[in-house]
Length: 297
Image 1 (tube, helix red, strand yellow):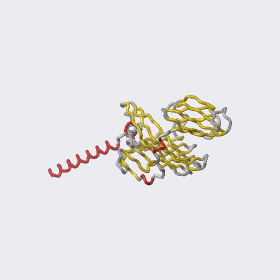
Image 2 (image 1 turned 30 degrees about the vertical axis):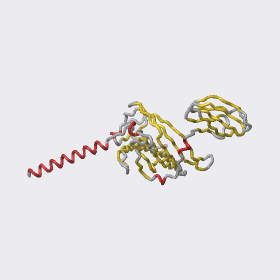
Image 3 (image 1 turned 60 degrees about the vertical axis):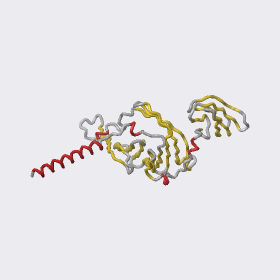
Image 4 (image 1 turned 180 degrees about the horizontal axis):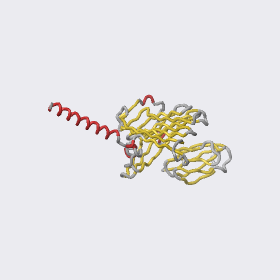
């Protein structure tokens, strides 16, 4: 009997240890710093699925990282988007660079993550007896690892009202890979859906998923000269997006300089005085010269 008692005691202790360990693991909330702990060379291929529209895709690669202690973190990306453009009625590929600064690195990405499931019921202020709810907000949290053992926090928000239908918004926060979203709305007859999923990702030189299944051809050389002009065609102004402050010249088809000036990294240039036709904008920045053409309507 003593042996059995000791054995049961040891088994109980092991079960309690395992249970405590699981509780510790499954209540762990990823911090902002953990979620956006990108490293130079990390790469992601993401599928964008929109309701009533063709598939879209996004490629992201980390090109630079700057740490500022526990205060903030600055990450630079090369990004390719390949989505359907309803203006030209075809799939369009766009190259761009982006730099994002993340703050409050020690705070949890999801507030009150340890509370798990929470339901809030809304009543009209005149409904003192709380007999007729006008809306509910429910969120559910969970923690798991994906097939490549990456730690994931998941939060599903559901908000519904009797009059306007419902909204679902799911954020899936991956450790060191950022956040993917699922969003849907419905009013009973119409709705919108956006679903983001990884086709593959490369983290710390290890690949998860199938990069060959990613349908976008990737040409890193396209990122060496980052210059975007929009809208094009234009009528009142053009937006110039580039990496550095620049000097610009606008030239007509006869080679005559029409406008010139200085601008910041992103800025509007008024073209309201230009007549309709084809023009060229020459950008001089950081010792390099780039040229784009645009139409004035």
